Length: 380
Image (cartoon, rainbow, N blue to C red; front, side):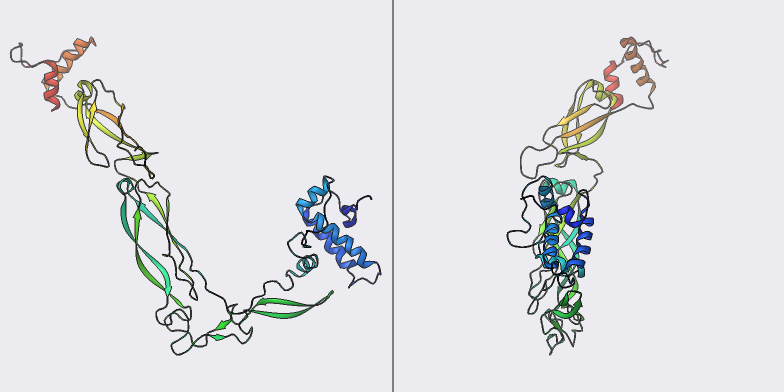
């Protein structure tokens, strides 16, 4: 048998949007629903219209239908393309509600407290070695006067007379298809099923009060910027016996006055005297573990990069530490004594740079120091 052209049934083009499909179905349903139309064939016509809509109204089924694949008009459980029964889909589109949805009996049960989130600045030293910090937060605690009931001493919450504890109420509604019931949240108790005629003076009927608390936070070794810690049960108190929420702490590495962090490596800058760079020396540099000795090779140039392996940041889950990357600056003296100038001029002459020999008040070679001896003494 040739299959039914669902696009033709709804009177739309094949490139119609989902909204156009829905709009066409609404219009045809209003005209051909058997409760509205006087035509004896309205029921059969409406059945075909609904079948077309259940296929084309679901993008996945529509794609299969367009590819020529066999598509069932309804799901195996008999429910429509919007996870509701076919008739319920129609009511939902016309009235914005599903008949009988959301029914609830009895008062609400325990409700878990809300989670909280705070930020915490961590120094590089704390991240490298681990630390403990104390933070102060404001959170909702169970009221110590009414113990969370919200009612004044000597009284208790009462069953709502409007919904009789159900939290929802039904209203009758007349439509072109007959009389239907509308279910809404109870306007008197707000869906709680209980009302408080004598609210607690401490919490004003809320059952909870704001309280300031100091919380201890353990910072793990090797923590990275942006790490989020979860402190279970340190959030706000729950309602009606519900458990506490959690506290989430977002860690941020604070800017350091000496080091910058790149990956797991620490970078810093040190300046050495010109003579130390030329002759080589050992200098003391800072690390997160205290001062350490760094060898400056002879002939070190400005902006040279030297490494101290294993003096960077540790890793959170173990493994090799990063390195300390030292960027070397060379200090050029701005003022020289006559003897220092003479020594540098002699060095320049030996290098063949053609530098002029400065005038000296002393003549002769008696008692003169060697060139590098003068440089060492002037630097020290």
